[in-house]
Amino acid sequence: MTEKPWDGRFSEETDNAVEAFTSSIEIDRHLYQHDIDGSIAHCRMLAKAGIITQDESLTLIDGLEKIRSEITAGSFEFSDSLEDIHMHIEDRLAAHAGNISQKLHTARSRNDQVALDVRLYLRAESRKIIHGLLQLRKVLVDMAGRYIDVVIPGYTHLQRAQLVLFSHHLMAYYEMFARDSQRFADGLKRINVMPLGSAALAGTTYPIDREYTASLLDFHTVSENSLDSVSDRDFVIEFLAAASLCMVHFSRFSEELVLWSSSEFKFIELSDAFSTGSSIMPQKKNPDVPELVRGKTGRVFGSLIAILSLMKSLPLAYNRDMQEDKEPLFDAVKTLHACIDIYTRMLPNITVNKFEMGMAASKGYLNATDMADYLVCRGMPFRQAHGCVGQAVGYALGKKKELHELTLDELRSFSELIDEDIFEALTTRQMIERRQSFGGTSTKNVKAAIDRAVKRIDEEGLEVLTWQLNVLTPSCRT
Ligand code: ARG
Image 1 (cartoon, rainbow, N blue to C red):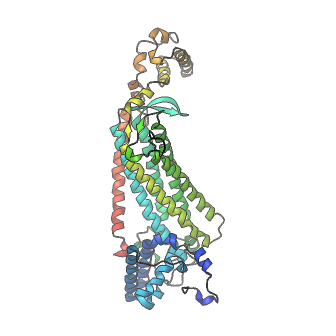
Image 2: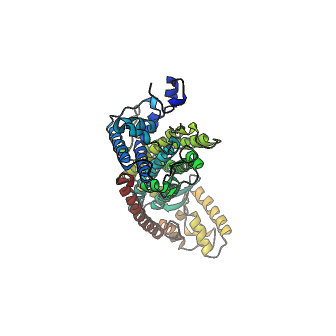
Image 3: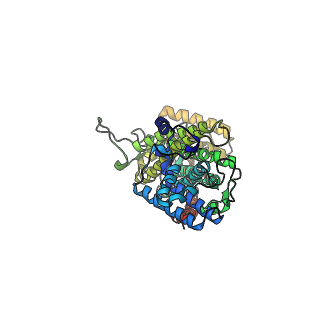
């Protein structure tokens, strides 16, 4: 049985079952780097404020760095009796710093400590996710450039609707992932707030310098209200909402890849390296990667709902319930990283079946709107043109022909306004190139959208680079 920091007030030892039940070490041990960074910044601040001496601070920091090495090397022993990562590190500090270790927890509590750790963790992970999404966006833009001459049926209600460039379809996903990046970046503003110094709930009697701690840990601001600081997990929920939305995008893309790789569509083929076979049906090649990404979406939604439910109705300030936040959060972060990574690897290895896409695009009356537009250009009101083309489609269906396969005489039987140039208006090239409204699918538009995306990726890449440099040399360690 390990001594507890609260032994003074207790006359009975903690029951083993309670130790096991309340312990979170298996989960929060993953926060050790952030916990140690936070403790080092705290030591420096305590020394600067004259609450401990410079020598004491250096002894504590030296001990904390030794613990960091022990945990990283895997030689650190974890046990349920020490509950969480904060108590493990403080307990072990005695072995390296002797009695001075007892000064580390001056002017802080585990309540503000854990809030700090989760913020440091989520700041680092959000940045990694933004970086990962940037790589994925690059892949999409590269593909959009590479397949700029490929057409695909665009769908509504999963019925062939109008022709689009395959690149336009890919760039739609680029836009979704760009918005996801923005959401994570926006969430960072609220994650990047320093809670330490709020202590248990009411602040502290020591003359601490919270701004200094914040600057050592590269935080932009210091939290305003001590009660809120120790009980706020809004930033976790916001992150999980952004992660859920990002997974919605992945699940939609996955659904399309699954459909497109089926024998019914044959639009794409996933490479062998990114597919699996069946243990019974020798002919099968299954799209397991997109299927699993689609399936993992539910896990991330689950994490969001778990933490919303966890926080709902909790009275101020810290409640032990909140210890349950880490497992769903870590799982969602791990899942999202894995999905971003596998997509970034899988997409460039997809074979695009230009011929099948083109074939599908040439059947199903995808040029019906274009025929209506043709009539409108010759003075017919749109609603009338819609009805006229509807009749032409009905007639063509009966003849088992496409609109452009009807003769001029057949077409003219629906409107005298139709001339020989109708056939040019119904070609694939015209259907694509005439859609020049901003955001439309003409090649010129899509190329311009790709150029804008490349520029944006370069700009955002520079910002990500500065984060990466900061991660290499966090100011609290220098
Ligand atoms: N392991 C705890 C958590 O993750 C740390 C805070 C504990 N605070 C307390 N008063 N027991 O929430």
